[in-house]
Image 1 (cartoon, rainbow, N blue to C red):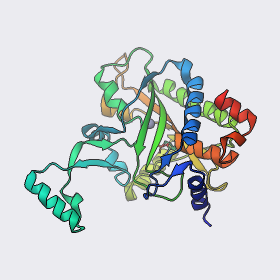
Image 2 (image 1 turned 180 degrees about the vertical axis):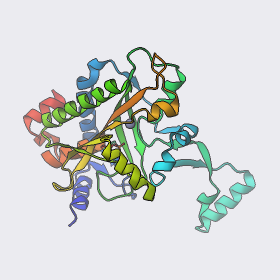
Image 3 (image 1 turned 45 degrees about the horizontal axis):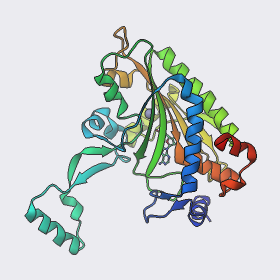
Length: 302
Ligand code: AMP
Ligand code: ZN
C-alpha cells in the first residue's frame, strides 16, 4: 500500500487525526495538539530572547490586502475565498429549492470582504506599513496562524487547513539575510534535539502555469527559498517542515515599508509547518508519545 495512505490510516486508527470526509481537513486529538504545543514552547525558548513583537491574526484576511499582495497572480490554484448568501427573501426561496433539487446552490454565493489566509505573514505587511516608517534597526515579528491552501491530498503532511508559526524580519539586506541564516542554523539544531534527521535544500514556491516556471527558476537561481526537509512518509521524498524565505525588497516596495532613513525595507520570513513537525515526530518515534525516547520527551516536556 501507498506509504502516505498507510500512515494516514494509522493516524486515524490511533485517533491522532480525525476524518472529516474531506482530504486534507482533519480533526486533531489532544495528544496531537500536545505535541504542537510542546514544539511551540521549544520555538519560544529558541527565539524568545530576540524581542519579536507577537501578533496573532485570525485565519481570514482582508480581501483587499490579499488582492494587492499578488497571490492570485502566483498561486491562484491554492487560494480560498469566503463567500456568503447576500440575497433577499425571494433569493432565499430559490436557494432552498436549488438545494432540495440537488443543484449547485453555491453559484449564488457572493464574495465577502474576507479570504482565507494563505501564509501567516500575509496580513502582517500592510499592518506594519500602516504604522509608518519602521523603527531604527527594523522590525521583528512572531506570528502564528491557521492557513488555507487548496491542495487536497491523501498525504497526511499535505493538509488544506494547517498552522504555520512564523518569524518575520524587516530591515536592511544584511540584517534580514543574517536573520534567515540564524534560523536555518537554529532549525537544524531544534530538529536534531528532538531526534529528527534533517537536511536543508534550496527550494521554490509552486508558482502557477508556464510563466510560473520562470519565476520558480529565478527563485532558485537567486537562492531566495530554502526548506528544511525531514522524512515523514518517505525517506526518498522528504517533507518540507520549515521554509526560509528572502523576499529582497519586493514586499517592502509593494507595501511601502520604509526604514528609518527612508530606504525600502528588505524582508525575510521563516515558517514552521506545525502539523508537519508533529507528523515527523510521530513517524520517527511512534504513535504513542509515552514511548518516545527520554531525551526527546525531555526536550519537549521538560
Ligand atoms: P511555505 O510558505 O509554502 O514555504 O510554507 C511554510 C511551511 O508550511 C512549509 O515549510 C510547511 O512546513 C508548511 N506547509 C505548507 N503547505 C502545507 C500543507 N499543505 N500542509 C501542511 N503544512 C504545509
Ligand atoms: Zn512568510
